[in-house]
Every structure is written in structure tokens, then in C-alpha cells.
Image (cartoon, rainbow, N blue to C red; front, side, top):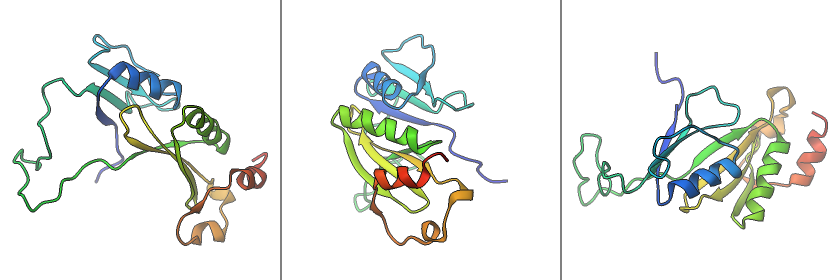
Length: 169
């Protein structure tokens, strides 16, 4: 047996409370009780049965190493490019929920790209620390067309057209 799925992500953030409020208010994450919410908060996606999906740790906890390290703890050689997180992607169950979050991001002035990937529709934004995230809705398999499945490249997302296409579904 291999890996089943990503269980959770942990982000170092500059202000745990501010980040927790953002993920709760904008993306609907539930906040788990914490003994030290200024240092670490665990959150759960709204419809998740996982114990926690995203943990937010103060970047000043002192346990992390500075810089990029190999799996065995050694620093990378000078010629090795630094690695890092590009973005996290969160999935929603409906186009309506994607649009609701889109409005939340737009109201805060942090809505980024809006993309049509064929089989899924995505919006992008940045959290309070500037970390990029994606929120995506996958077209239900029964509603997928051959055009959706075979789309080449990424297109701009036309919310009005998608709402007409999937109205009442």
C-alpha cells in the first residue's frame, strides 16, 4: 500500500491569531481549541472528518531550522536551488461555494487569478503572510463533457457562463 492522501499542512506564520481569523472567516475553517492560540492553532476544513487539516504555527517557536534543508537535516549544497511551498489548494463542493469565497477575497482586495482548468474551476488568493492558496471546484463526473476532459491549457474563468451551465445542478 502507498500513500492515501495529504493529511494536513503546517504553515509558519507571522501572526497566528490573524492567520487563524483569516482562514476561519474567509475559507470557513473551524478553529480547534488551543492552550496557546498565540503560538499554534489547529484548524479543520468545514466539511472534513479529519482531526485537523491546517496547522498555523508562530514562525518564532524556535524549533524550525533557518533555510532549506535536506531530509537528513543537512543544508543544501550551494548549487542546489532552494525549494519551498508554491501554494495550497482547497476543494469546495459547489460552484456557489467557490463564488462565495471569491466574493470574500474580492472584498478584502486579495482575489488573484480565476482559472478554468477544464475539469475544475479555480480562484487564487494570498493569506495575511502572502502565502498563495487556491480554492477549486471539480465538475461532478456525471456532468463532465469531452470538452472539459480534453481542454488544452488554462483559460480565464467565466463565472457567469459557468453559473448558467450548472444552474440547478
